[in-house]
Length: 223
Length: 407
Image (cartoon, rainbow over all chains, first blue to last red):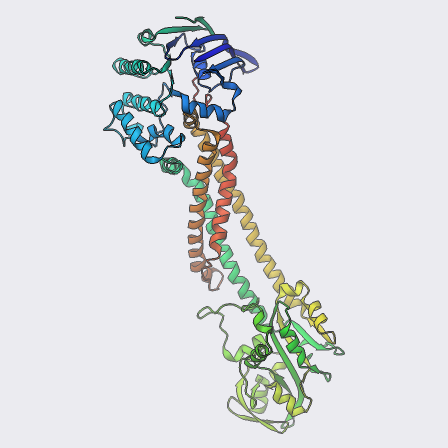
């Protein structure tokens, strides 16, 4: 389902070239559950963003369901993300001036759903993550763990086949982090492909396989 | 949720930052509406004051010489009264008041004076209407006229002839006398005055003007024509013409219409009014340019700052599948709302300022001008949208991953 062929990424920084990812060849099947580990600056987030169509590679190609992501226009990639990919961020990235319900409605609004459908589906998703009593709360009125649960509900709004998570437990206490990982297990059990960047060994162990990156190179691609 | 929900909530979330930018456009529109409103009524007031100087176009017989404007109608030569009708029936724009005159010398108690026949406005309009067109095909409110504002600009009835060369009604046996005649002959309102074998009742004494008009007796044109056995002739038509139309060649057009007459203008009167109007128009334009620049720069600056501050939010929306059009529409809608509210609010406050302070500052009465609403809103929205274009485009072109700062 997800495939990287000879992907590399380098940046120009003050007249010198920094290589973030070099010659990455990775394949992930539908329903796979992959954790990406490695030291800071090893290119984990770069790899994840490239899989999500958010960052163009300097070389190589990225395929999702056989379609070359970076041969699409930026707007076509956005449309593809909307239908197929859900992102979970370390800092949750909730829109601060919207309520929990409205934050979960965003993907549905972008998909062109009518308001009643948006509200109905967003309410059910927040019920699923145990926040049905926090529908009208803004992010600043929620605990960190609750904010992450709103973000998880938002990920599921458009029922994506692929969930990409960038250090989803990085800002959480161990107990809340464990619940979040439980949730990822559920998502994988439902048949979704889950790819998770993490520094947490316990979280990494829950995945079916692990990719290790060191200085931009995938050291262990098969887990 | 709709796009407007997203925009509306964001506006209220960061309303303090928005306030400065909103104030710039709001106060800008307020200022320009107030200036335009006051300027409009000032121009009318100036035009009216200049009209008090008398007519600015004189139609004379072809052979007449103009040694003195105020006695230019004292010519032996005459031309047909039909010229007045010809002017009335023409499609010439910019003719405010037409005043045909026939002046003849007369003597009362050994003192020489001038008897001038004039056509009252009531007969003039009736004649034009009867002949099928003319005066009513022109704008009802001429360039030198102004809608009546209570207690302001309304001249005393007796001054009407002096100020505008027009008098509404004058009976065949009635006369108006200049102030010198009143002093010389010792006559007053209601007295009788015998002239060229006919007795007139003095219906009013005109205020002093310092011109030969002070030594004139005014009677009905047709009465004077009958008294002098000259038939339907006149020896001058005084016209209050719109100065802008005069600049645009009104004199030449009258010359073309009346090839057997001589048409002259009072250049100073015309020039003064044209210059005054041009000055006010320039002042208004300068303010407009300042407001467009300041308001536009303020909104653009705010929008750029807003885009920068919302990089993470924009990136999140893109990650969730928002295309560039959603991002552009989000910022343009915000600009539109800013412009709409600024325009409407600016019109209301500007009008309140103009109506309240116009009389105190400029000494003129100012009335609200609803026709400025679309202008103010259009200008405000236009500025806001243009100023939002580039920031919106920048936002849509943001690299979604760079906005997270996590790579």
